[in-house]
Length: 406
Ligand SMILES: [Zn+2]
Image (cartoon, rainbow, N blue to C red; front, top):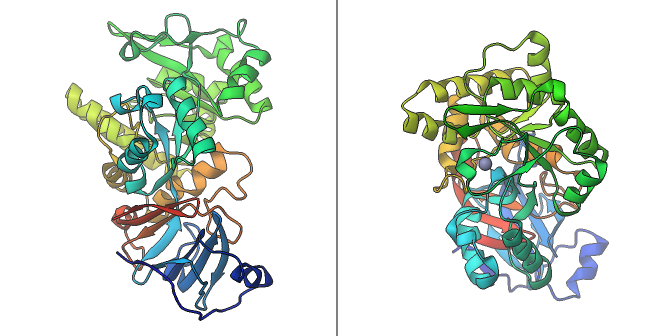
C-alpha cells in the first residue's frame, strides 16, 4: 500500500491559508505527490505535481513538494490523476439495494465499492428506482457520514396511456398528456428529484410500441416546465418514432442510443446533434446477443460514431442495475470501437455530465483545480495514451477521502 502517514517536520509554505492550517490538526488532509495531473480531458498534463486536499476540497496544486504534518500521503509516482468518473445511467434496483434501511452503513459502503468506487465512479445519475431505498441512502450520506457517490436522480418516468414498458411489470408508470401535466406537478417532482424522465416510445410487450407523438405536445410541455426549474429531461426512446418525438419535444438527454434509425431529416439530425446521448452500448450488445440480431449493436455503434463526429455530447452510462453485471470496462471498449478517442471518453466520464446534468459546475469536481471538490481517480499509467488506461484504477477519492484502493 502506498499510503503512509507523513511524520516529518519538513514544511513548504505555499500560501497564508496553508501556513495557518499548519497549526491546526490535519486529520482531514491528503497529499498526492509526484503525480501527472490531467486537469481536464483536453489539456496537457501537469507532470510531477503535488496536490493538497483538505476537508474535501483541493486547496493547492504545485510543482514543488507539499508537506503537511499529519496529512495522509499517497505516492503518485508513475500514475495519473483525473477527475472522479460519472455513470450517467444507473438504477439502484438489484436485490442488494432493496430495503436499504435494514442494511448497515458498512454493508452499503461495500456495495458502493463493488458497483462504483472500484471503477473510479464518484457520481451517478439514477434514472428510475424505488425512491424509498434512495431516500434512505441520501439521508444516511447527509446525516451519518455514509460514503456514497454523489447521487442525482430522475422520477420513475412519464408515459402515454398504456405506455409502461413490459419489463417493468408490476410497476405502472405515471401516464400523462399535455392536458394533465402542468407546472405544479413538475415542480412537485423536482422537489424530490433532480431531473425528469419520459418514455417517448416504449416496448409494452406483444410486439406493441406506445409512442408519445410530437403533435400531442406532451413532451414539449414537460420540457418547458422542467427547464423553467433548471432541470434536465431524459428520454427513453425505444425506436425511431420515439426518437423523432424526443427531438421534436426538445429533450436534453437520450438515455440510450437508438437502433435502426435511418429516416431522419437534416433538420432532425441537426437537432439530434444538440442532444446528449448515453450510448449504453454494452446493453445494446447484450440485447443483440439475446435477440440474435447483431445489427442492433452495429447500428447503435454507428449512431454514436456519427453523433461524436457531428460534435454531439456523449455521457458515459451503462444502465447498471438493469444489467446485473458491471459493464464499465466493456462500455469503454465499445466506445473506443465507435471511434471515440480516450480524451472524448474521459470527457464523457467527467466534464460532459457535470456540465450538462448539473447547474453550477463550480466546485463539482469535474475539473481538477484549486477550490474544486476532491473527487478524483488515480490511474496506474503515468501517461494517458489509450482508452484502456482509463480503466486502470489505482485509487478512488471521494470528497477528499480514499474510498477504494486496488
Ligand atoms: Zn435504465
